[in-house]
Length: 184
Image (cartoon, rainbow, N blue to C red; front, side, top):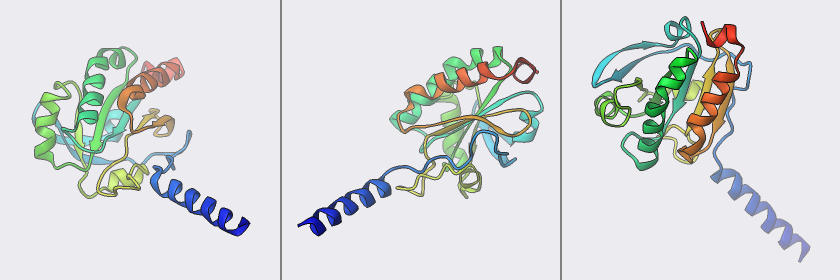
């Protein structure tokens, strides 16, 4: 009887581990991969460079599963609505997903309201570099947000499939940066 109970507990624990998203491998203070990617802003494509953006101040890099889905639309709208607050503290925002650039061109207008860029990462090089690959559905990025300090290190991160708190947490993290960092 005890052996059966232990086997059941082990099976439950294994299932819970397999279904739970991975924690962010990049911890506070870790350097982030500097990337360039094809991105869309206001329906137009351009080459986005994280290094160039960091030269201007902190950057919120947020990963999302799929453009056009309900929760991803909610999150993009929330970031768009908060862009004035991010700009007021010297921060920029970039969204990243495994979607193709044509999908993101449309998404950048409709959901992001032409207020911040979204980058296409179909090869998942950037997604994997930030450990943002969804473990249960490896074709998608997990919903994971980072604040990257101008020196290229993680200042804060938040992972949750629920889109509701990402903007608030990232804005608070940017505001908590030392003034010399956030108001460059």
